[in-house]
Length: 119
Length: 111
Image 1 (cartoon, rainbow over the protein chains, first blue to last red):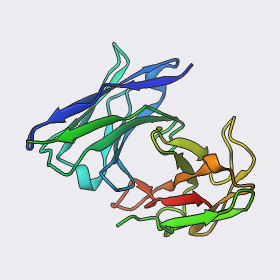
Image 2: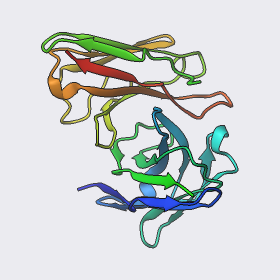
Image 3: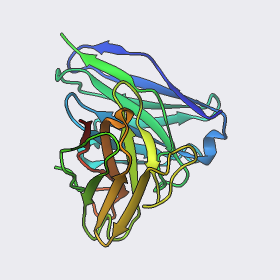
Image 4: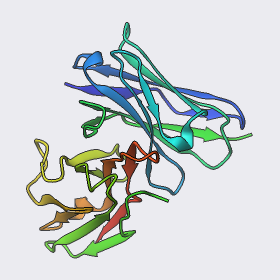
């Protein structure tokens, strides 16, 4: 069974960085792109960026460029999302998802990770 | 502001048909297929329609998609109470505003 399992909820202080993991299983990690999608409080889904685990190439949405870093460790089949300069705007949910081809549909999603920013 | 425009809400009684529109531009829907995602409360988003008209295995044929030019639509026929949730269109965008665009989402309410 194909699964993307994300790390647990986090509480961070304003201005700090959150690092979320996405562990994949049931398929070859390098054969699919991994995307990250944010749902800010009261908002819709917003695409943040992607990585090709096969070669480490990344693409970021303009809005998140410079504040987000996506990496992948092919030795343990885990993708990571780092979000810096967190601000107190209520809990946001971050999802990882995979696609076959960088412009393919996101066919399997992780369960989501809630990041709460509070002083 | 989303590159893809959806109505914020849609509703229908059980058994009725609901249609959700998604309007884009030449750089996204005009040159790329659309995918639709269902996001039910407390769950992860789920791929509902891909490449504009295709249903993944396990998605009921009550859900159907279409696309013409820079517009697309999702139809839900025979509305069920468990269909209540948010629906998003998404497409690759070839402009510098991309590369992946989500619509703002449509909340479907089953009356």
